[in-house]
Every structure is written in structure tokens, then in C-alpha cells.
Amino acid sequence: MNGTTARTETLLWVAQRASAAVLAVCVAVHLATVIYAVQGGLTAEEILARTRGSVGWLVFYSVFVVAVAVHAPIGLRTILREMTPWRGASLDGATAIAAVALIAIGWRAIGGLVG
Amino acid sequence: MSEATLNVRIWRGTEAGRFEAYEVPRRASQTVLDVVTWIQRRIDPTLSYRFACRVGMCGSCAMTVNGVPRWTCRTHVAKVAADDTVTIAPLRNLPVVKDLAVDMSAFFDKWARAEGRFVPKVDAPNDFAVVAPDSRERSAADAGIECIGCGICYSGCDVVSWNGDYLGPAALNRAWTLVNDVRDGAGARRLAAVAGDAGCHACHSQQSCREYCPKHLDPTGSIAGLKRATMRAAIKGEI
Amino acid sequence: MRTGSAAMGWRMRAHPNYLAFAIHRVSGLLLALFLPLHFWALGQAIDGAVALNSFLRWTDSPLLKFAETGLVVLLAAHLAGGIRLLAIEFAGWRDWQRTTVAVTAGFSLAAGLLFLLNVVSP
Image 1: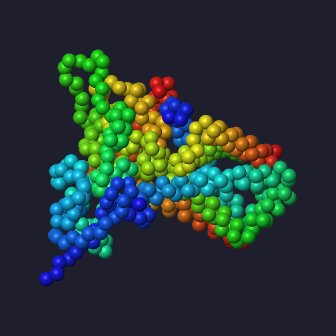
Image 2: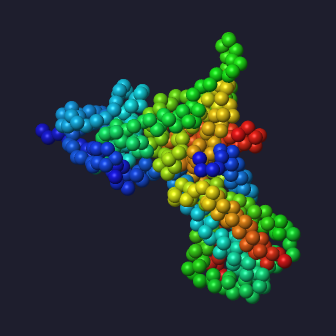
Image 3: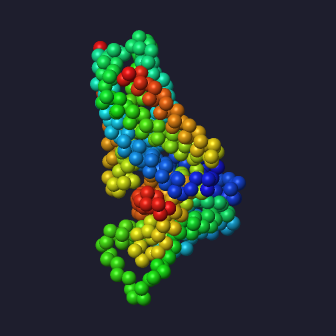
């Protein structure tokens, strides 16, 4: 294999499924929130009134961002390995960087909404 | 009285080749294997193809019929001939030897790489093993052991096409039956063999294998079992 | 090519579970590509309500509302497809998988419709 062991691939799969289970809850809440929030038009004031200073939303979105940052890059890695010639250490590195980047911009956005 | 005619396109050549057209008289209860045989005997004796039992037991006659992998001896022309046309090609995902015959070596090599053979326990007792047929493990094994290695699932799988190392549904299904064989001693070694990008984790549950298996086996389900078993083994540090 | 034609290749894939796979993969890919834009847009809140509002007003056009509805459908589809996969891999779902595919499709469209109705009514 190209450097990643059976153990590593297995644990990546576990991380993907575990983050999927977390996301199942987060996305369900998010969909309900979005559908509710767009009633009567969406404004920044309405969003911020809900999120500003809220510990609950801070925790929820922080967990949401981490789960997505685990789930999406692993998913993209799978697609790239199957459908393009890109594989190996450089793809694994790019996957890790994508995860870190998503956490960074995700938590940055949360900071703007909650802080 | 004019006969109804079937227009048949058959792959001729190796990987490089072409479809050639033949006309075959239609008959009642005609199978695709009947058609191929008629062409080879009456029109073109150079047509190469495989068959053996012709009654749906051996799996030798598996080919691609109108894009779908099938046992040709068990495929009625009436069922698949849209517009009186049938296109017959060799199985996908395996190198073509000639015309409709493919090289099955890779299929069986992967079977071996998946540790798809029984390994007796080192301390196997001298007496018969007592295995309850309705136990959870034996039921799981029994659900998958009827595989005759025809290659249809392997041929229908897109992951096999996309990932050259992927062991494929048949090999993984066999490995799962052995994981559930309480007499088997391969244990973590087999789980390590079926884990990873070439193993069970590459399966995306497209389920073409389950869709086209003539014995109605469920390799997707077997592979899901391997995913769970390898997960437990990885968490416990066994692989 | 030896499948006969590209159409022949698709005949093999024309069953519900394959379609479910395809939708799951495409929706995941599109959502992953959308995500950085989403985080950037929400990050406008850092510069205050006015900055966020100006972005939100940019999305008021019918084209953007249509796109947003599409995103909701993609998200609902990917969620439903993911739950289906977790059920196959962990809960051993088998015989009624065609039903689950239909149910997940229905759920996705329902979510998208709900969103669309809420977002277009004044």
C-alpha cells in the first residue's frame, strides 16, 4: 500500500463514521434552525440576537465545526484517491491541512457570531 | 414462413477488438448461452467462450449481457432482448483472453490475498467441532458460503474498476464467512488482510454485487460485517 | 469499448442503491466545496451586523434563493443517505433498503420544499 497501513485506514474510516454520527444530530438541528430562521426574511440582527453571548450555540457550533473538519476532508480524500491519480503522503498532508483550515475559519466565524 | 430473428452483437478480439453482428433465429425459451452456442456452431467456429454445466450451477458462462453481468445459461433472451437486439461482451474488470473468455487469475489471487481460505487452529482438538447451526456466527457464515466464484459481483463493482488493489466483493464475502467460522484460527491476520484501502473500507455499498449475484448472496452485508470486525480489532490494537 | 457503449455501462448502474451512492457522493462533494464560502460568509459577523447584512441582502435575489434551496436539498440528501449508510454498516439493514432509499429521497425533497416555502413567503 502507499504508506498508510491497514490500521490507519481503519481508524480513518472509524473517524469518518463517528463524525457522521455526530453530524447526524448537528445537521438535523441546523436544518430545523435554518428553515425556522428564514421565515419572514433573514437578517443579521435576527441571527446575532440568537447567537450573541450564547454558551449553548457556542458549544453546539464548536462541536459542529470539529465534526465537519474531520468528516469532509476524509471524504474528499476518498474521492480523490478513487477518481484521480493523487494519493500518498502529499494527499494525506493536504487532508490534514484542510481539516485544520476548516477548524480555523469555522471557529473564526463562531467567534464573530457569539463574541 | 419467416422466422423471427435476433440481432446479436458480440465482442470479438482481446482488449482491442470490436463488436461483430450476427443474426440468430429466435426460439422459445432461448437463453443467451443458446445464442452464443448457435453462432459458434453454425456461423463462426472461431468464437471463443466458456460454459460447462449450462444449468446454473457452475458459473462458467458469466458474461456481460446488454451491459449487465449475468449467467448466460440462466438468462432468457425474451427477458433481455429490447428491440430484438442483444449485446454480449466479456465480463468487466478482468483482462480479455479472447472474445468472451476472460482471465480469472486476478479474481482468485485477490481471494488468496484476503486470506479466503480456512486455517485450522493450532490447538485444534482431535474430535469434531460442535457448531450450532443456528448460532449467530454460523448463520452469518451460512449466508455467504454458497459462492461459486463466478465473478459476476467482481465484474459489476465500480470500486473494482476504480481501485486496482481492491480485493472485491467475492473475496471479502469469503473472508467474512471465515471470520465467522469458530473453527478458524487466522484471526487478526485475516482482519489485517481485509482492512484498509484495498479491503473492506473501500466499499461504498453501491450494492451492484448484491443486485446481480445469481445466488442472491449479499457481499455488501458481509463487507459491512468486516468493517465492524476490523473496527473492533483496530480499537483493541489487534491490527 | 467493450461494454458496448456508455449507455450500456449505465444499465448496470441503474438500480436504487447505486443511485443513492451517486447522490451521496455528489452532494458530499458539492457541500464540501461550499463549506469554506459558508464559513467566510458567517465570518462577516466579525465586522458587525452591517457587514453580515450586506452579504445577506446580496443573497436576496431569486437566483441565490434557488441556489440556497438546492443547498438545503443537498444537505438533507447527504444526511439521509448518511443515516442509511450507517444503518447498513452498523445496524445490518438489508431487505427493506429500497424503501429506505425512497424514504431518504422523500425526506430531502421535503426539507428543500419547506425551506423554499419559508424563504419565498414574505
